[in-house]
Image 1 (cartoon, rainbow, N blue to C red):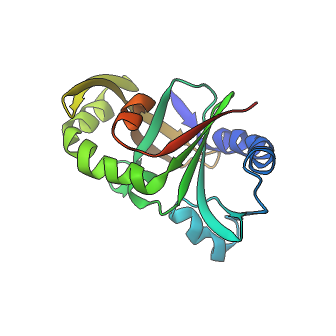
Image 2 (image 1 turned 45 degrees about the horizontal axis):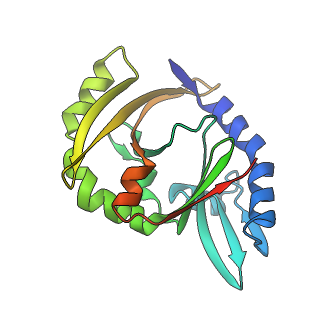
Length: 195
């Protein structure tokens, strides 16, 4: 399966109105500043996985937005933006919060606690050969059982073959982890119902 990067960006752009409505109606933010990645001075924000700044009670927060077309009850963590040489947003991002939108829910995830959990608990459980085996496989998803603090979890390792309309292509790889794993291990997040 090839992930069309251009179509994905179109889907994300369609979701921005919904996201902005959520920020105003539910979070009651004062100001939303979105970055235009066509401008070179704002492109550096994209390299740090910052999509926008939200201002609430005179304080600005760096936000990374993620949009999924289905809610699987898990969080997708991008380990490699371009496998194997370019790290994904989990390693390169410097946001304060990740806003994770699904069709009926929004998860507001504290990025610092997520990264701390990943570095202290998950990274050592993800051998590099799992990613290499998936890269050379015909499959796009494999499931693995891992134990975090003696509790078993099933995670998925996902490969996305990306292609732009200009003909550029690359492989993105990440994992999905269940939200209950995050909750049990102290990752701070809030869940909102929103359509």
